[in-house]
Length: 275
Image (cartoon, rainbow, N blue to C red; front, top):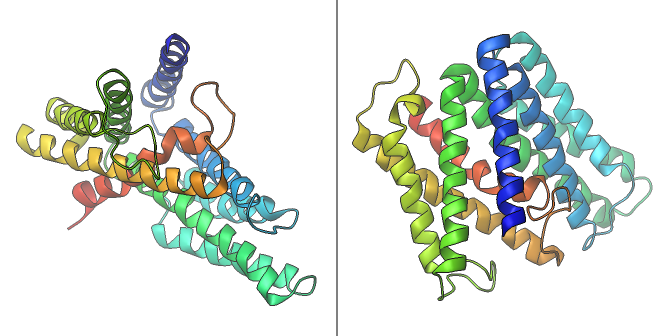
């Protein structure tokens, strides 16, 4: 646990440094958006690697998806505009079509289709969900995007320690054997408290909301974080792995770090930018 706390503190320091550089030096979310792309590519790679344990996938599958996602993402970052959500769909369709056309002559249709669908789905899951956070950073505020991440991660932190120290009864042992009712409830309540206290940066400079509403939004983000964690855990159980990768000791891979944020981001987008 001590190692986990130390590494977690270092990650917090790194994220804080990126935030301060973007806010005070670059005065635009350039580094943040670059990191989002790197994370999206990392999640895609991990999904492909995990699926490769169950499916017959050919070489270069991640390259196909990585190129399609990067080609769509980078021009919008350089242009200073948020990545349109429909363009992520274009990237997924592009990667799926490229892979299907490239592999069909070498495999039967039954063999080529699963990996083509896999890369398209991975782009929608990783790039599409993170694009919501990208939209918040560009169209609401940098502070708002980071506040969404903080609220989501507090759900993870309190859920982990609450479940480890106080939890007994498992909530979904078949999917995530370490999650308990106590940890889950504490995590969601922690997100609600964070939303209440951080209502200012959550709404950004142009959205004035009462603290009570901030607390409700925090609870929604906590619930979405829990759901995102379950979805990722289901995929990992299907692939037969504990962590999506071994990128960071005690934490796992990119997917393990952002599984909850992936689902919290679209909820925050709907609340902050939806009609």
